[in-house]
Length: 360
Ligand SMILES: Nc1ncnc2c1ncn2[C@@H]1O[C@H](COP(=O)(O)OP(=O)(O)OP(=O)(O)O)[C@@H](O)[C@H]1O
Figure 1 (cartoon, rainbow, N blue to C red):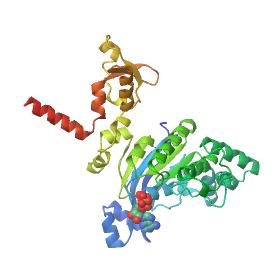
Figure 2 (cartoon, rainbow, N blue to C red):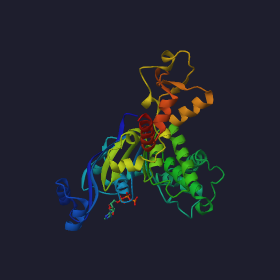
Figure 3 (cartoon, protein in one colour):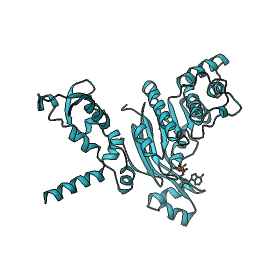
Figure 4 (spheres, protein in one colour):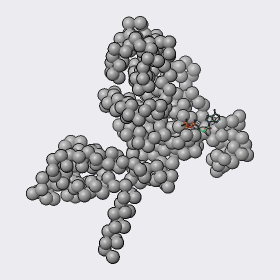
């Protein structure tokens, strides 16, 4: 997954009639509020640089108004930037002719929307087939392609229903099937699960992760929810007021938040579901050599700590050998390290304070 599918370079978006001239002022340090107060322009995005992994899920996270939708709309050029570059699979989106852009939107990139955006007067199968229809496929190909994806998202039997006859979760499955049916390499998902109830939302995240294991699409997923970002994102970029405040893997962000703003986000995170055995292992002491008499289970290095703890408890052991992709033992963790890794910073402080007061 090391390859980059989408490169965004020094991207600026300023809303207002004289945006290009305003870019220079923003580069010289003019703030978002001063840009609005002094020049009546709105800063949408400022100097965005992201390399999005091919075949991976890139999450863009931020609160309302931080610039997420503005950013994702640059990827298929629904918005023209004020400055900067957007390169998708080696092609400069801003240099495409109208015709190239139309082909690019039909074949390369498809979008899943928060409010599903289904056609209410068309059945499930016709909604899913819509992209294939636009691509000029025959009726039989449309039906065949649509049926395959309807089944794959768990909606077999609902082909002839209308959207209004389906629950929100089912409607979003239709939205997902429609986006997948065109066979585009890239999926843009703008708050795609945000309108769903929490349980259905978790369910849809699982559907997406399962599909992704099989399909390895390049997915750009927008959300304002950190738990969703951490569950889905191979990489996460966090936006605030149009700027990226931090980007990296979920683990990197949780373990080393860039500033107080990010710290306040990650404080309540369930670290046991984010931090992996390979991150906290002692690589100098594989379990077997460290203590040959103690029994240990074996876990791959990307196993999250909650799962390591569960398996240790199940097997009645307090150590685990950590293995790399080839199955070679590369380190070990014991139950104390696992518990410490799962503790929130607040809990860690409390434990340290208690230790100090006992010692004094
Ligand atoms: N067409 C526009 N004209 C003027 N300002 C705009 C326009 N579109 C977006 N903005 C401004 O750009 C900034 C970023 O908006 P954007 O919609 O991208 O944020 P967002 O993170 O997607 O928010 P939300 O989660 O609420 O959709 C905001 O300050 C917004 O008011």
